[in-house]
Length: 87
Image 1 (cartoon, rainbow, N blue to C red):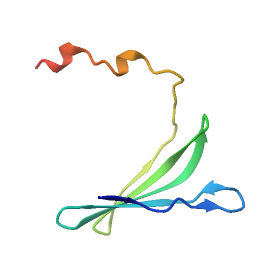
Image 2 (cartoon, one colour; image 1 turned 90 degrees about the vertical axis):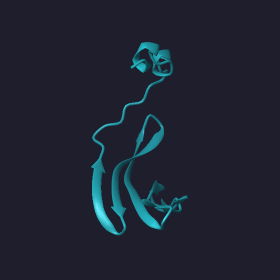
Image 3 (spheres, rainbow, N blue to C red; image 1 turned 120 degrees about the vertical axis):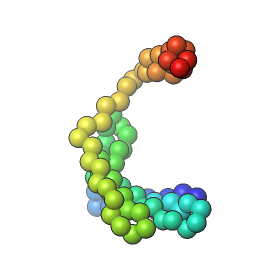
Image 4 (cartoon, helix red, strand yellow; image 1 turned 90 degrees about the horizontal axis):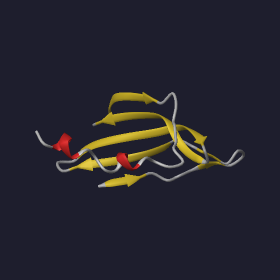
């Protein structure tokens, strides 16, 4: 079950502070994702930094360099080529 941490705002700037989620899978394994470096792209906040832990051990750092958004997505993004599924 995924439990999202609280969404906190930095009072002076009204910016999102780092957010943490805790995902426990059957057997009690714990996976934690920490999101930070929130930036606005076309009116939407994206976390440009993610740090992950498994069972308390640091496993990865993911840093986004760029986020692109679309005003309209082409229909082919939602209607895959039927020939690609036949293998």
